Image (cartoon, rainbow, N blue to C red; front, side, top):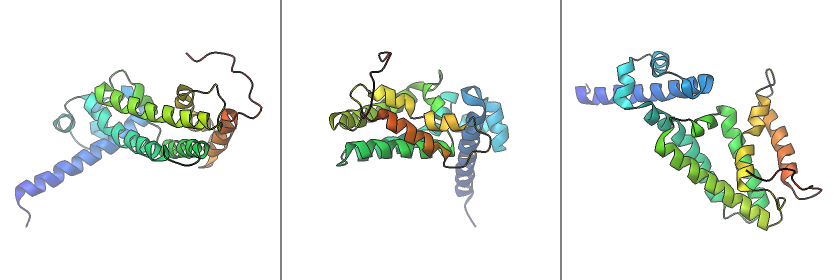
Length: 197
């Protein structure tokens, strides 16, 4: 028989996982304005349980975003040493598209109440993207006027476009990633009409 403290810890761990799953689903459906009450209801726990695990909504958002952003940043950092910088950038964008196919939570990175931890995670990821783009640009794999910020903004585009299609095939986003990547290549590129903001 398990001692009571061990049972409580197991219940608390289970509740935390239920809350994170419910928060992720609720944020994906309702955006950053999803309420703590709705998250608690979806998890099948009381609102007080949410605040026992996460003192603020900001902490909850950080807990939801952290594993996604960290995994993407780690993938990008591993690719910084790849021999072919163009292939590395395409692989990174493919990893990003695959992650967003599961559930796109990228809007939480810019949420007003995302908090300092999310801002730090976001800036670290964006720095990795900029470094990948710089390497690809220096190798001549992408057009010389493309910036890291351009690619940061384009990361979500393949999945965003597919969201307008009713019942899309699961890999349809890859088609639009291919179009985007062709647009990044230097062959046949025309000067961009508007400077980067």
